[in-house]
Amino acid sequence: MTDPATFGARLRAFRERSGKTRPVLGGLVGRSAEWVKALENGRLLPPRLPMLLRLAEVLDISDLAVLTGDQSLPVASVTSAGHADVGKVAAAMQRASLPIGPVTPIEVVRGLVDQAWALWHRSTTERTAVAAVLPGLLTDAQRSARRLDGAARRQALVELARVYHLVQLYLAHQPYPELVWLAADRGMLAAQEADDPAAMAVAAWYYAHVYRGANQVEAAEQVLVDVAGLVDPAAGGEQLARWGQAQLGIALAHSKAGRAGRAWRAWDAADSAASRLGGGYVHPWLMFGPAACVAYAVTIETDLCRPGEAVRRADTTDYRALPSHTRRAGALIEAARAHMLARGEVAAVHLLGRALRESVDTVRHHPYARTAALELSNRPGTIGEGARELALAMGVTG
Image (cartoon, rainbow, N blue to C red; front, side):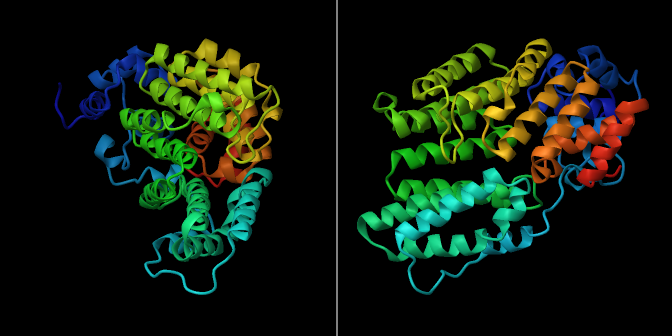
């Protein structure tokens, strides 16, 4: 290595720490292996802020100062934007005292949880919609799980796990990363206390999200492998859907680690499960089904740095088949990421605009969407003009 005080030496050190090769790092930020090598060797000057943020995101760096050597700039200050009501939800999660008051019947709790999930999927401002109900819902579910007995308590614990999963989704990309881990952990604990394998399978899916986000892909795979054996895919219906969802999570872990063969074997298992459930099947709140498998295939190809296949899949995906505004927006952001990998900047701006129309909240709080809009806003002509409009709508400045 060269002088460790240089930008290039620091970049190389972080790349090697993350286990990424130059081709992989270059592919993930839309550049070549030679470009990465030139940065590391000092033949190129450090890139501009948008690309620095992309590198930091991929390398799991929380403060640009450790990469650039300049003054502190928390990556989250640009890539994340706190929702207006996040403090209320955070306070509910941080509450130490046990909720008191009358117990809400389990049938009522289940109906309230179903309604909250429907709000998450049907609203174009899903964070705003669920923030209004999450604190009270947490209280009701926690109180029922604590005070009911026998089968009713186990049912309440299953519903409490579902509430924690929704809290985790709400808090994702918010300025409370420790609470995302806490929500995942509490969701798994509630499912385990309920002694419900199907609930544990779903809890593992959400736990794998936080593991992948922290680049702990082996842990993400393992938590899903552990629970996949608890549900019986031959039973069909709900168990098959949750087994298929676990296989999909395993595929995403393998693709992030660059293991193409294992990723696609797991994806094939998930897709086969979805097909057995029926061409038009969609799980009512997990949204697992054939359309979800098709959409996640774009993410897998993009993570594997195969731009041609990623774009082909993105361009042939029917996003309308996903009956959820937030899932459609997320899938469109992944399609934009695929096009950016293939240098298709016009398409990327278009897809980010479509995603914004599907869900303002999803796009506004998505780290990749924010950094991509910031990066593209520096382009000349219509690309830059469109990206600046997107950045303004997202509240991104740079």
